Length: 90
Length: 210
Image (tube, one colour):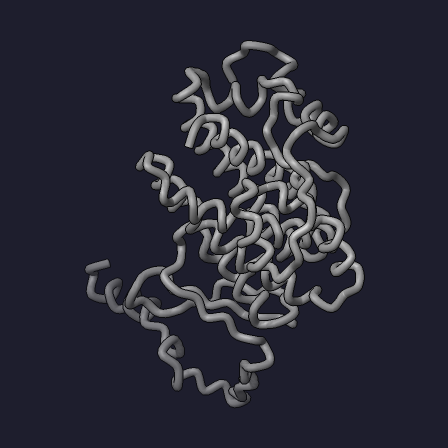
């Protein structure tokens, strides 16, 4: 069974995905996770989650390419450069 | 605790660390490979710390104690010397040794020498993980005939790890009937073979500073 391991580096920071491991049950998964992600004081805490328990979502439609819905959809860099050149401050 | 008793524990940890490391690269799964190799490395680390304490008393160095003695002078228990065990025997040995070691460390933490007691407490914190690992495997294999047979075979050797007065407690902890122990006197051919390999590099240039 595959388990996903999330690691908290310091108290107060968000857990981040650290990797996955293969273990026959939750006890083994905990032992292996401790070993691989906690042995060198690199973790404050771990979340060990069976991959089956994760509800994965990945199908986002953007067929009309409405990039203006996204924060990265409107590039300011090129426009700023042009404006600076016009103003002679580039 | 005197230097001779410290050496018994140090030799146990060194030789068992060596034996456990024989699984590096060939354990049943990659995760287990990482876990068991790391346990092996911990045991050798414990041996190093114990040799250092003994070396101070004996006026020598940890390296000299680990590598420069004759095989006949090692004080290790026959349990840790056994070679080429299958996984069932390896887990049987691991489970019984870690349980015996737990009893031994409990006593050591009460030692009148604060350095020894302090080291025992440090070792015990790492050994907690070893015990977790050993017990989860023993639980998983509990009903396997090969594992039960292995426990049967390894049990008299495991009793020999502890001084006579601690053996009843071990029997109780692992829920087995006490039997005649295989004592730490005399060594198997397995130890001679291990020693040849273990000291090979150091013996290749005697007296060198590495």
